[in-house]
Length: 157
Image 1 (tube, rainbow, N blue to C red):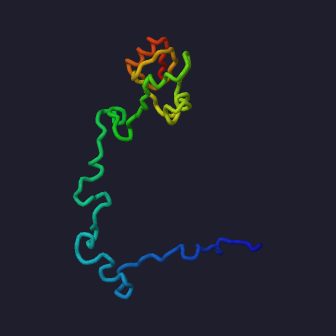
Image 2 (image 1 turned 90 degrees about the vertical axis):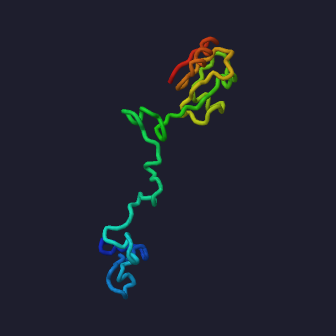
Image 3 (image 1 turned 180 degrees about the horizontal axis):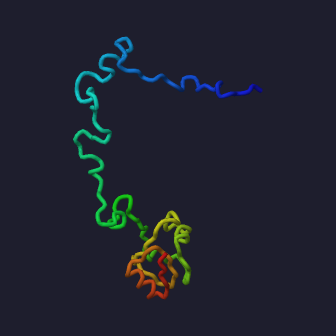
């Protein structure tokens, strides 16, 4: 087996191209105006428009909603900072037996929500007729009273 030394290493054939040398005479193909065309802002030294410029259209950074308030991310939950909760009505929980403990994993197992990592809020839609221990990230006030009236408990995760 032949030994390999640093001075033997070469880049793969065709993987490296020569640097474009502009302004080195007409015969080079990039002489005279150096590929910048004739006159105009882009032909001048220091000319051109910034990458963020959109031709007079309202720029993206001005079109996006702003975060208001003193604590920015927490003050107004908009855009990527919004915390979303998956709503689940009490009527959907009627499939569980009396006294069952229901958490996000149990909701995934019976197909009510898609992922166990989702934040779940229990709403009062439909009502409840049996005592259940429900563990969720949020409860509407009316859902909480309905759960307790049925003899169950509502635990906030």
